[in-house]
Image 1 (spheres, rainbow, N blue to C red):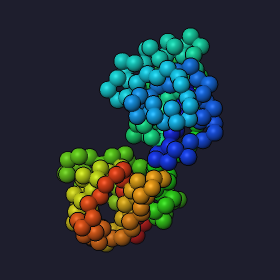
Image 2 (tube, rainbow, N blue to C red; image 1 turned 60 degrees about the vertical axis):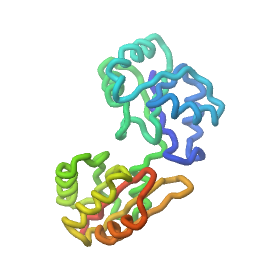
Image 3 (cartoon, one colour; image 1 turned 180 degrees about the horizontal axis):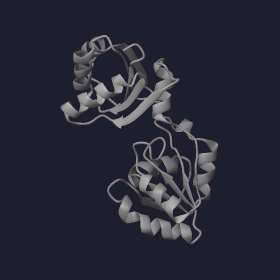
Image 4 (cartoon, rainbow, N blue to C red; image 1 turned 90 degrees about the vertical axis):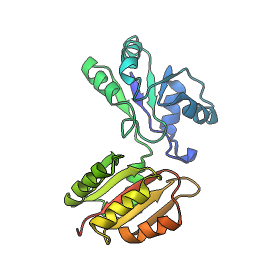
Length: 222
């Protein structure tokens, strides 16, 4: 059996009681990065065998994990932060569980996507999430333009190193489009910056962004 377990996106206090119970009961924990997960697990006094499961080894690791689950072991799957599979490893494993008819369950828990959406103040009745914006500027612009034409709140992950470039693109498309930069969610220096694209571009020129960023576009009036 596999249990996909969300972990905190920043604040360890957001770990759910059910997640802790599962992690203490399983036989093995598959982690996106064992070096990242070990301090979290140690904090909650959880000592279980760890195996790495990330984008670069997921296909190779699958047969081993499937065999262990078929032998009766209970395996938890966690990513570095938030919900496994959502812009994180686990999709191939989920598909294998379905194909091999292996029992699995997904626990609810922390999600940067929904946290940012709720905190942005933007329309929540319809939205899209498209993971990380493309690295190349041309492809990034096309992704943004496509999101704007959809007419619903658009959510992306973005690197602090590319945020200024992305805000420049948005300003060129529509300087007044409403943007929210949600930064360091659930952590000590959590911030929500809401304004037109041009205003935020100017702000972050003076205040270089740091940390993990969720970028939201309110295109309801575009």
